[in-house]
Each structure stands twice: as structure tokens, then as C-alpha cells.
Image (cartoon, rainbow, N blue to C red; front, top):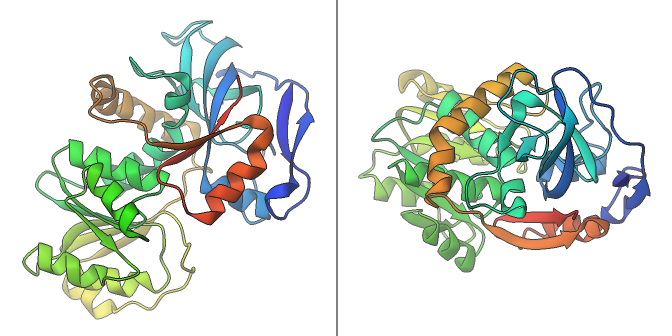
Length: 326
């Protein structure tokens, strides 16, 4: 099969088209003929040598795909050979075929194309796990999304807004701010020209927000603590701004604040399967009604994966960058 491999750690051009053996299906897995795959920031980190695949995972990058089931263990599922599905995988997505644990495989939402469906798994699994399961965003609460124009950001804005929450989002240009608001953010904040903490406090009558989804960390954390409501929660999913921060622990104690974080890739199949069940029950109906929509910025053919990574690193995109395999 054709696949994209990382020839050595380095810049985008270390990604090369190659021929690889077909993956071997094990118990509890299905083989998917890949039509499209999503490009995500962890793929970039892996290419740079900063995010090794978990033990036993493919060294081929790619964490989400959509395609057709062509083989596998289907004894305890309603899925069948030939079904169109999307899946979260530990690696191997930049290829013509990939294996996926059946618990992490979901049917393509009604009315969605394969390309659109491939944009779902990594972002929706991540947002649901962190915003709703870990940070417990609840009825009547507010959410601040850092990096609102990213794939994760547009997902969090749409999902929380569709579920009735007030959502604010930061972005790095006025155009990106406008895009966030078009997707459902009540207020977009240009972090280059505005103080997001001051804006959030002014929008909430000085109360602050209940939950912050943070992919920056670093010196953002003390500023985020200052604009949290009492009992507020910060869920960290990346450290693009640095891995160290200074926190006012007196505020954390006095105001009962929570700072938490997680990475999804190394979690167990059972953990991810539980998220998949919640998404199918709670989110898939909204997708079928188009209350949630794909936001795809650019589509590259598989052989142009290096160009896709270069675009990702430029941060000039809004939404998802995709690879078309078929």
C-alpha cells in the first residue's frame, strides 16, 4: 500500500511517499480502506521527533481517518464489511489502509461525506473528553476556547454553542476572530491586540468563565486563573506556549479552582470506546441535523503531506487540514 513515512525527525519535507506492507488485523480490530485522513498538530510533533507513537502503534503518522471496512473482527458490533466509517487510531492514518480498534470506529454521520467524516474523530474525542468529561462543563456555564480557529477550537466552539453554552474564543487575527464568531462564539478576542482576561471579565460582569480549554499553557496559565469564576476549571491539552508556569496557589485554594490536563493518544481502547459511545449518543444526532458542520480549510492529496504540514505550522488556517487518499 502507499503510505507517508517520516524518514527522519525534521522539517516537513522529511515526509515521503513510500510502499509499506498492509497492516495485520488482530482480534477486536477492523481493516479500513482509507478515503481521507485528518492532519493534526500531534502529527507535526511526531515528525519533529517530539511525540513518539505509543508502544505497538504504527510509526506512520495520522490519528483519524474515514473509509470503508474491508476486513476484521465484527462479531460484537452492528458494523459490517462495506460500511462507511470514521475512526480514531493511534497512528497509521496517512496510508491507503489502516487498522482500528472496533470500539473507536463510528459510522459516517448521515449526510456527511468521507472527507468531512475524516475531520471528526481526533477533535471531537479530544473536546468531549476534556471539556465535558474532565472539566465538567454543565448547563448554564461559560467556556473560553484558546486557539479558536484551530481544528480543536472550531470543534469546541460549535459543540458547546450547540449545547446552549456561552462561548468566547481567542484567535490571532481579526479574520480568525470573525470566523470564530460565525461558528457560534459570542465574542472573539484577538489575543495580539486585546487582553483576553480583561475582555472575559467585562463580558461576565467580572465573574469570569467556568471552563477554559487551553492548548497554550506557559504564561497563559496565570492569566487564565485570574479570569476564572469561582470553582472554575482549566483543561490543558497542549503546551504550545511552554511547559512551565507560575500559579497563584492562594487563588487556587481560596476559589476552589481546578487545573487539569490530558493527552488522548496513549489512553486505553476502553477509555476511547467510552467516549465513542457518548459521541454517538449525544453528538451524532446533531451532526445529522447539521447543527454541527465540518470546517475544512484545505485538502491535499496524500503525496503532498509535506505541504499539509507546512500549512499546519504556518497557523494561517481556520479549521481542518485534510489528506485525500482516494
